[in-house]
Image (cartoon, rainbow, N blue to C red; front, side):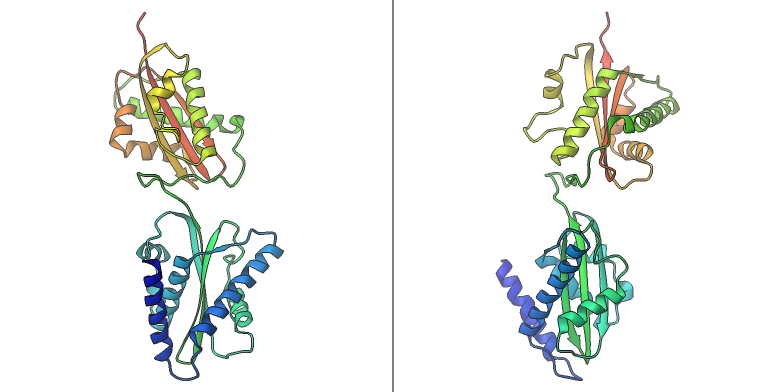
Length: 310
């Protein structure tokens, strides 16, 4: 399937070039060579700047080519990179951006010319350390050349479509997270008060259990009530020595680049019927809040319990 798609893409490119006027159109082989050399020049600059090299992605190449086509049609004002990525099947990414440059004169080193034009148009995109993959395109239309760079940090999703966290820095120390856990607990109890429910008592054992699972998810790059070994919440609880509680509940929230993590996590949980039901369950008496972050990804875990009657 991929090979047939590539054949069609090459055929379209050939038609695009053959229909050009106002000069000698480059061949497909020339275009491919320029693009390969351009990509290597971008990576050379990144290595010299101490930034990790990019991996070239075939789909991002196609997106770059589409942006170049929009430029020839004077439709760049309507360009939304997120929508364009989605059209090409890219829905899971942390960050994406693009640069486009145009020039008229053909030189003896077109990759170098395209590179210089992109640098002139750049605004911190080419050497952005957050990008992991990229695509490039060089196109010619009616006497004008277009060079496009598209960078992205693509991520994987789980079976439910949730983004799998990717660790790019060390986890914060627990002492740095206490204030966020306290803030989140205060917001949780305020929500219960607003719904005429009793507030929940903080339990250190539940909090430690919640915190450990938040860290595990972030370290292992997964998100969900079942861990990679297939253990669910009840199985994880059964492995502990906690026997003070007769019933349990677990809420999870994952956020990316939030300025107000404690409040945003609560808002996200309240928007989910199942999580909201746990937060507003009258019978719960205790709760533990655990937080883990690397400064980018934030994971909040709420563990609820109903204390056994003596």
